[in-house]
Amino acid sequence: MWDSLRQSLDLTLFWEYRTILLRGLLQNIYIFFGGALLATALAFAIGAARLSKRGTVRVLSTGYAELFRNTPEYVFLIWVYYVLPIIFSRLLATKFNFSPYAAAVLALGVSYSGFLSETVRAGILAIPRTHIDAAMALGMSRWMIMRRIIAPQAIRRMLPEALNQYVSLFKATSLVSLIAVEDLMYQVSMITVHEMRPLPLYTGAALLYCGIIIAAAQCIQHLSDRWRQRGWA
Amino acid sequence: MLDNFNRLVLANLHTLGAGLSVTAYVCFFSFLLAVVLGAMACLVRLYVPFIRIVAIGYIEFCRATPIFVQLLWVNYVWPELFGFPKSVVGAGIIALALQSSGYLAETFRSGIEGLPKGQREAALAVGMTHFQIMRRIVMPQVLLVMAPSLVNQMTVVIKSSTLVSVIAIPDLMYEALKIVNAWFEPIEVLTSTALIYVVAIFLISMLAKRVSDRFRNKYGLAAQA
Image (cartoon, rainbow over all chains, first blue to last red; front, side, top):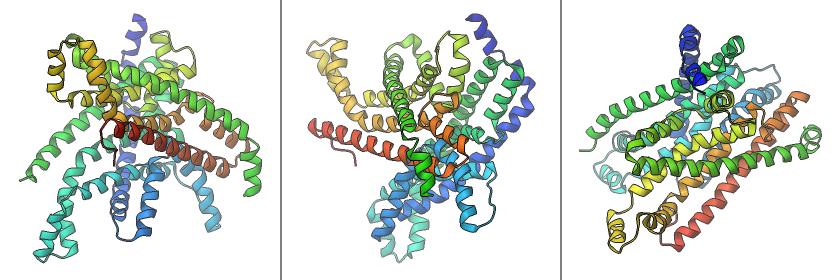
């Protein structure tokens, strides 16, 4: 056991392949940003639609959020990659194909928009009605109320929960290796096949993810805490 | 389309059913293990000062590592490192449990720390032992407060369990992908599989929420919104 423990913590192999692994990690980061952007945009749209005055809009957007909150990311990823192109090709009557990158961004973005829309909704709901009434009494337009009263407060309230969702999203980017995006885990599997030494590579990958996520989450929390406090006069 | 549906989904219903039962088996045991491990990690973190750092490290590691990475790590590294698990099913269960135990430990902790301190002092004053306080004052309340997060974590376990197909556990996703690879007709099978998962997760979370709301109402906590 001690020998295998020493072997798994021996990171020379990890260092040897650092350029390939870093290139893989970069793919993770690209897909994370693409997915986060898509998820955030969709979440604001859906979250606002769930508070709409019109019943149909409300029902549809709630259905959307429930659907994607309950869909496993992996199943949805595979579905987007294999099924969606076929449906599109039949509809458009031409050959249509996703690159694995596009499929990954689309699947992860849409998956996480369900969770995030819940956060957006809660953030907007948490704003006291009187703030809006007061703004209206001052003669602000609806757009101005949204931009200057609701959004700054709602975003500050949402931030801690949204940060959790982004962490989950980053963790989920490890799945994209399964549709042959050449990300970190893909490279780790390839090197394992090549070197026949799974111990240090998989342990290294686990520790690397762990380190990145903890460090990034701590940093963002510190920075955002300062910014949030400024708004709570 | 309907032809394909009959040929690919209905004709293979027993295979998919067998897969679903493997999924259920894996989810059940990993969730059970996760609750036990999570409670242990939380108790160690709160009440055992000199190995607290180990518990904190464990919790942070479990929470900050993707489930997919943990799955491969447990599956490939643990047998050589610790001599177990001996089977892929064991590896799947342990990996899923690891991931959730980290989250559950934190939920437990916030539940315990959220209890008013006066209750504990009152219980000490009437002469209860620490074990009695845990069992009769703290645990019942913590479980009620935690119920919604427990339900939530259960759905997360089911969602993550789709990944165990990657290490060749014959769960629902594995059987579905096998059919896809045999016929190269992904539409019907994958869509049905996705719907089965969505419906199953939705039903289970509804049911669990019902049960937890019942208990919360009975013992004086408001039902969750």
